[in-house]
Length: 480
Image (cartoon, rainbow, N blue to C red; front, side, top):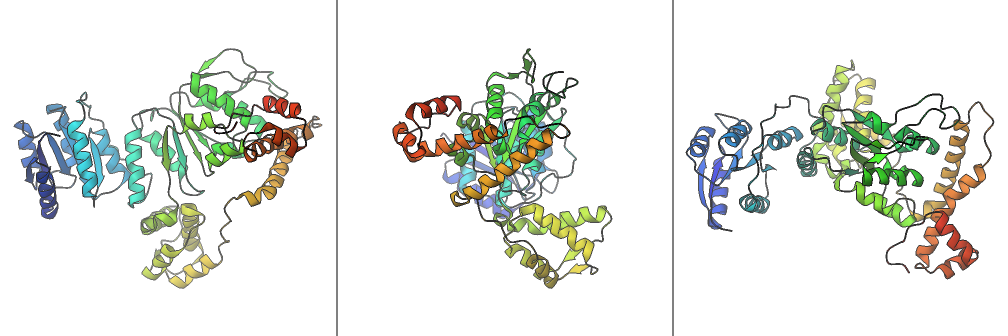
């Protein structure tokens, strides 16, 4: 990489010194200033190949400089640094045309890497200035883990790439999905959410793709599905790991071909929505079990975002507590504060229910306790009364999980046929649900040897082959 002239603007003398020394050692000509006016004069005079600027400076906000720089010198790259480590700062920097946003305190090696990318990247078309967002922050926290999420959102907001959000229950996956929509290019369209775990399995395809009049018993009129409702906007598929296998196949076709047909329909309908999926489950484990399509996983996992559990971002707890307490006060509950010992106790707690559990605790403290400042004793008593953390899902729990699944199928079956005589076929339906993962797991255990698998299962080899075809069991890589 050849030497370049780099313009640095930051009101912190120590940061200016560090950047000057580090960039000069790489052979660059570095010019430093503590104000925006001098930086702008250099830029207006045609100086500099790259700009590194702070946001808060004594005479002007660095973000406000970016649109002017882009109008005057569209190819001049701008790297933004800020101690205001919020999603809104990252989004504003990206919207206004910054090459990259780095939160303070920054890692010097990362900054040098960004500088190298900025100087070697090809020229791009000028970026138009967009109106500043004045909405309240949708996400709370300034921990390094949250900074990574903010930057991911900022990079993805101008695209239509499919996003897969993973994280434990209660971490705020839907909030991230809404932020991607609200700050994205489809923000003027609808945000439509559907929870796969909350819809009876027989109704999911109708819910997603809609149905025509007379498509099935009780379909008295045409009904638009979620894909149609989300036209021009974002479709959020929550708990995608609970989607039935048959519906996964139809969803895959939509992602591959960009169109779908309603239940009972014949004409193809063009899909026009961004897909964001979320799950708290390990999809790779479900793929190995044969209950989630591997090809669908790769279609959804174009841009993955992992939401950290609260125990990995405990430095954000004070800000979250203040936010939830303020929300509770707006809703009419008494205003509360926590003393330092109480806050420290919250930082040491494991938070099996994550941010949702913390929010519920703050509301409970506001509603049930008269003191304005909550002590550590009160917090201790509330945490002691909290339910124990549920054990992680393991292979040993398969039997209990299977029983729960059977019970759920039976409940859904009778809900679907409420008020009428249930149709026959419950036994075959549940058998199909159990049979497929059983065969897949046996094939995995026998390394794909169908003769051994048939022997273990007590099936004729030809019967096993027939079931593999009928159940559309995918080829598992590495097995013969």
